[in-house]
Image (cartoon, rainbow, N blue to C red; front, side, top):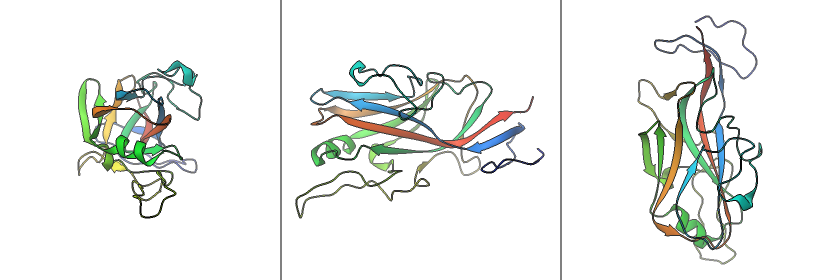
Length: 203
């Protein structure tokens, strides 16, 4: 694959078995809301595209602040995405009770089609944008899920490949499951990041 003159922020790298052009490093992201006072045992990400309505209609329509997904559960044609990792942000102001319930006894699963490709305790998914969880009481536990850095992510893939390839039009989703339903004290905004390299195959 020829490097050519790529715009700032773009890189070129060989991809086994396929030539790719215009590789860029960028995340896909999606928001899910957990309503206050309503028990929930599972939430799914990347199933409602930009402009679609949240599953809990009271939270309205998804804007670019909520998701950059252009097609529900799919990478848009003609792009391919090489998934490299995941990060999770929880809105500031979440209570300690909610944070403990959110992270304890929960798992995150990434599905490629119907195949679970990644499964890990939710507490292993680090914070991306900043500290989360707070308390005004001394000697009370303060929760921060990792250093707040855009490069702080739960990495996926093998040592050789270091990514999971998603083809154009291939379906995917991420699911958080709790062992028992949780009931948030306040509404919680969860923003999940799926990091990777996106490119267009050379035909």
